[in-house]
Amino acid sequence: MLSKSLEQAINTQINKELFSEYIYFSMAAYLASIGLEGMENFFIVQAQEEHFHAMKMYHFINERGGRVKLEQIDKPQFDFESPIEIFEIALNHEKFISKSIGELMDLAIKENDHATKSFLNWYVDEQVEEEDSMDTILNKLNLINGQGQGLLSLDKELGARTFIPEEE
Ligand code: OFO
Image 1 (cartoon, rainbow, N blue to C red):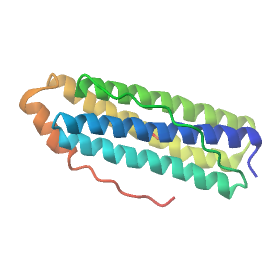
Image 2: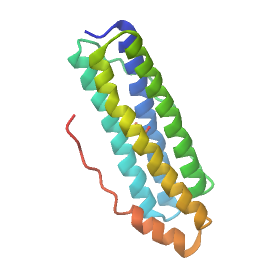
Image 3: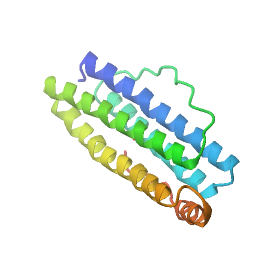
């Protein structure tokens, strides 16, 4: 059985994951509007992953006898200046999410809740990948100054990303 404090903290994290989904959809829509369909695809897949992150928590709360409580999702940024700005925001956002997962883990450790600690380990590992993928693309964008033929090649590369659903 989940403690009330962990139940509330995981519910808050569900909201953050759904907000991540929202931000990445908004980024995808901006990228579509400037003709970068590969990057649009990258963020649509990213948004699907965020939904998956939220659903995994949804199931965990239910399995542990808790109650999922959904709150209002904040409005995401609508307009952006460039793909470089987008990946800078995405990287900073992922750092914020990593910190948040770390705080959740601190709470699970404090409460000696081994099942929640084990559950959260998946997110700790996932956040390493999340930050790395945004950072790698941002570095490439900076190398090509975010423009020209390099931008089009990177866009093509990111068009190949697909969402692979994992077991929840
Ligand atoms: Fe859910 O990892 Fe990104 O935000």
